[in-house]
Amino acid sequence: MPDRRSILLVDDDQATRQAMAKLLIQDGFKVIAVGSIPEALPKLGNQNYLILDVHLPDGLGLTVLRAAHRNHPNTKVAVCTGATDVALLRAVALERPDVLLRKPIDMNTLTNWLAS
Image (cartoon, rainbow, N blue to C red):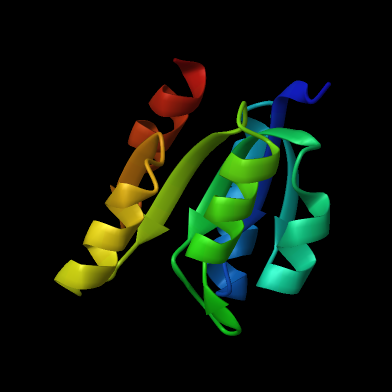
């Protein structure tokens, strides 16, 4: 069973990934931070939360989101994006993440979601 305070953070931007991980760790979370789909997929299921960027260097984060929903339906998912493509945003919404956050991410909104 995943640790209630554990997060898999998937973002290809190293600076963003490191800054978010640092803030989340300071808030008492255990964070595994990765930057690609192949790094993320084998780590799914060991965390209670998934924080996921849509645009990754090797494809769309939807691949990870779908795998999480299919194989680990209790994982809570936050999708983070700066995308403006209406079709892509619609595709994300159809996958029913728990929350959709616009970049730049308001960390207060994220931590409030994690606390809920």
